[in-house]
Amino acid sequence: MKRTLFLALLSAGLLSLNAQAVAAEGGAKLTDAQIKAIIDAQPMPTGKMLADNCSACHGTLGAEFNEAMPPLAGMKKENFIKLMKDYRANAFPTIVMHDVAYVFTDAEIEAMADYFAAQKAEEWTRPDFKGAHE
Amino acid sequence: MSQITRRDLIKIFGASAVATSGLLGASKEAYAKSSAHIVIVGGGIGGASFAKYMRLANADVKITMIEPHPQYTFCPGSNEILSGHETLENLTVNYNTLKSRFNVDVIQDVATEINYEGHQVNTLHNGKISYDKLVVSPGPDFDFHFVDGYSAELAEGDFPHAWKAGPQTAKLKQQIDSMPQGGVLLISSPRMPYRCPPAPYERASFVANMLKETNPTAKILILDSKDNYVFQNHFEHYWKQNHQFGQEGSRIEWIPAKKGGVVTKLDATNKIVTTTSGEQIKADVINIIPEEKAGRFAIENGLALGSNWVPYEPKTFASKVHPDVYVIGDMVDAPMPKTGYVASNQAKVVAAAINDLLAGREPGTPFITNNCVAMAAEDYGMTITATFRYTGGIKDKGFSTQVRTSAITDNPYTNRIRAEVAKNWQRTFRKDMFS
Ligand SMILES: Cc1cc2nc3c(=O)[nH]c(=O)nc-3n(C[C@H](O)[C@H](O)[C@H](O)COP(=O)(O)OP(=O)(O)OC[C@H]3O[C@@H](n4cnc5c(N)ncnc54)[C@H](O)[C@@H]3O)c2cc1C
Image 1 (tube, each protein chain N blue to C red):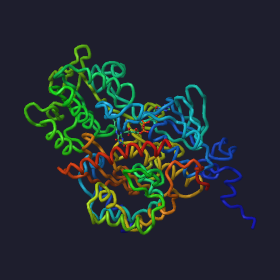
Image 2: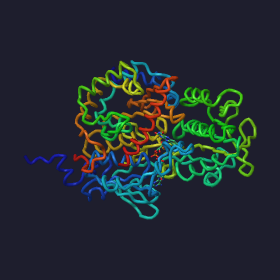
Image 3: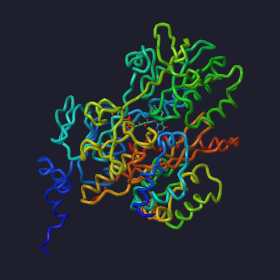
């Protein structure tokens, strides 16, 4: 959708929800078309921006190797993509991942797959870690 | 090739000088430094997440954190202390790893005042600290004036709110443990917004489960300043199955605002609260969870622009007051629940934005989730997944919301695994910032 149309939608109040209530109660839902308009109106978030949202459960850089959660660091790109798309389609029962994955576009899933595939498959915290250089 | 690139300029003058010149004119201090100095106010969930993720993104910036306490105690998990499933020690971390591995200069002090134009933040004991970018995450302050007769002093004394994990949590546990047989615990749950919306009900649940064993005739009375709450279906389902909720003799009773649940007054001497309906209720233990507003540091420095919560530029969480000051965590007026999960993801947005700006790039599109897990018991969890997308608009404070919550099931394995996911989250989350 064009940005102008999107802004028109906004000013027409179509997207005006009481977001605080929605956030707390899971109230009124946006339509698929509204979501698509929002996604299309902005550049895609980077793979890192998307993937760093996973760290609270899967560890920093996806590198938590404990009994409860599968690590994402070093995961093969194709495997990540296939799994996320299966979750998104609710292809099999999961505890929570189908409710996590349904929001992502194909391109976003691929960007996250690239990010995790590039991480060292080694338990965080890594003593050698120094931080990235610009 | 003798063309001077932006990269070369960064090498010569320091990233901050290049990034900010032309915008506001960088401070003199910034030009003199070899790398940008980023100062953080508050070493809680927002501040610590920011420090670590800033360092992950950039090995060269100088990071200083101002935090008055030598340790941080996590609130997530602290309700389980009340039922004996968790300890304060296990939820308490120190700043050693942030200092040593992530090269963060942690100054044990209280930040007092921002000199916006001078790019300096004042402290109680360490004087003025110059910054190129300031990140503010002091959390909320409690607002006691909604309940006549309640105060910060009473909260530190015999009426702990325990809405900041620490000594008050231990005190509340000790009070509940020494209730007489058949005693009453009264919990007053505040209006929105407050930190961790499901936590008052989680608290009631964990305590009820314990009382069922230790003091089976005791009661929990929840007086609510709201008419409904997140995960209400899950909590009521669990309470019906385990505490006769809604029946004669229920261990838990819940009074919504519309039925007189709002507490207006505390008579501390006689342990009596008064509600909007004029009713007076006596209880053995009174746990009033106070209303909240942005932390004092934010209010006093004008970051809330005269309101109770802090507005922000949605793309970067820059403050409305000055573009080099960023605001995150419970204190911001975002269309997101006030959770640690959200605070840490806002921190990552700011780290990415600052890193982009220092490198002369336009900040990317933010993306924030709140994929939270709550518990009614060690074997009963529930999940909420919320996604906040940046809209570029001004409605709904710049973000759209998509939410799903887990369905009720009587499959005990599913309920149990959801609780395990919650416990895993607590552990991994603590590590994600402090190791
Ligand atoms: C009982 C309970 C259970 C919870 N459970 C969960 C949960 O399961 N999941 C979840 O995601 N969230 C949970 N939360 C919410 C979570 O704790 C908060 O949302 C989170 O701590 C917010 O982070 P913050 O950085 O804004 O504030 P805080 O984490 O409170 O950090 C603020 C820090 O700033 C410091 N500070 C304040 N003023 C100054 C100053 N002037 N100078 C320097 N430093 C200063 C303070 O000392 C503090 O360390 C829970 C909260 C409670 C009360």
